[in-house]
Image (cartoon, rainbow, N blue to C red):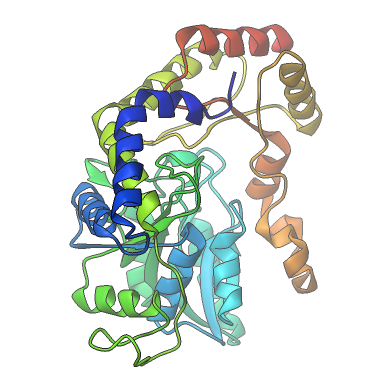
Length: 376
């Protein structure tokens, strides 16, 4: 059993993927070839926005947007405390200061009430200028944009949506990629829509932003003269081979994979809801299920179940064993666990189970049977 079965997915899409790769090899247009533009157009159409800019990875996608907005030293960027490091690290690398926000323990996403509390705290301290909110669509479920966007407008902040885990999710029919002032995603292989290496994308409706991003991703060059660099940028392009791989994968993603992972999630929930705390998806929201993450009573029970499943050939993962406030990179800030009680609770109790569109009923039943046996 695989935690995320990329091999089975490849065999389902083998002809289309192989044909796409071969076409790139024949063309030898390995950088910025035609499949890149085709993929960007397809992604923009699916997300429901005017522009999509492919780039080297999801981390660069976040950094490029912050650079385009001129974020830097003295600026506060608010992001979830319970997520992958990139959501904070991209702020730090350009000189801004990430401010961590506790989560809603039921959805694992940024808590809007705590967000406003953190904004007020920063304003009262007077050392930083609040500039950007980076909500994270953790484990596939979109963040609570209904609450977060009004808070951003109230305090004059921009919203940069980190959809690395949430691409394919939606709120009342509006897809991830279309929320906030700009959105990003990652094509890391294990993401809901993944390539066969690194890749990322940025989504925006702003024509000027699109032009700026395309300049910044190519060392800040001028659109008219590639040897005239009008700003300091990065070298961050989505290569043609990855775009060719993603084109058929996006088609399958839209046609059936999002529905398939929701079928798997529903089967898990129905079988496990009386034994563990199963994931909670808000009404009107659709998750793309980057992970199916349950909660146990405490750290001891979680770790024991994890070992029990691994001994029986069932892969599982702990996302995440510590909050961002507890990362060594931020230890000098000495942020106490008491500021982030829900994050700490999540780090001690979460366990992610095998989840992908090609998980069979037999495999689902095997996972559930072993969990129920352990709990009993």
